[in-house]
Length: 234
Image 1: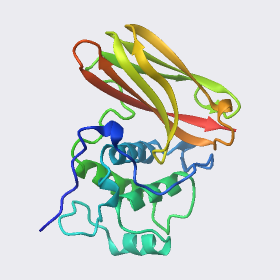
Image 2: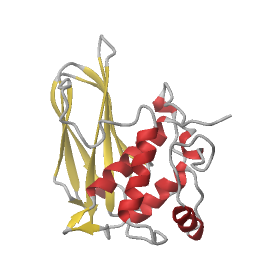
Image 3: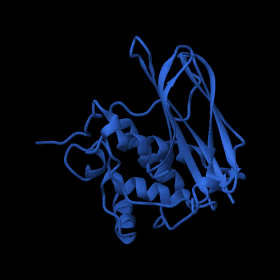
């Protein structure tokens, strides 16, 4: 029987990411002096997709029915790096690429294409991640300031609510590990702010982090999710 990528769980709040650990580094791959935002966005999206489904990380991309085809060069590179051929292993590979580590000779564009194929093959992927300029204005994530910010400092995350909502605002590292819960409660309509104090988390490494806003409108139960990225530097 052929396999297909699993659909997201109905209760993502109980899902756990199933991937290898990876600490980010300020030595990120640059293109014309800028961080490779395409690979970064794809990696964040994949990390969120793994949080939506506990089965996705264990999916073997060489199995029958996989929508992703791994070339012999890719499989050889993964093997040389001590990685397997599951979705979680590809996330680890992307994290290593973003951290400027050894990718077994695979280019950033090849890794980005691979991650993109996985995201496109996963039904219900995180379309809001890193792109909040959609038609839905009920909940807006307004970014954080300053960005980047220092490990000894803090940044203010701003967002707006059209209606009173039950809000959960969480910071994750790029591997999907939860770092901090900034808001967990009911807030009134209007522009709201939350402070992420990096100094309050000793040993937090420099690198790319993301924050995700979940809001459930009081009374209607209508749900919204937004996500953005930020850069922590020393």
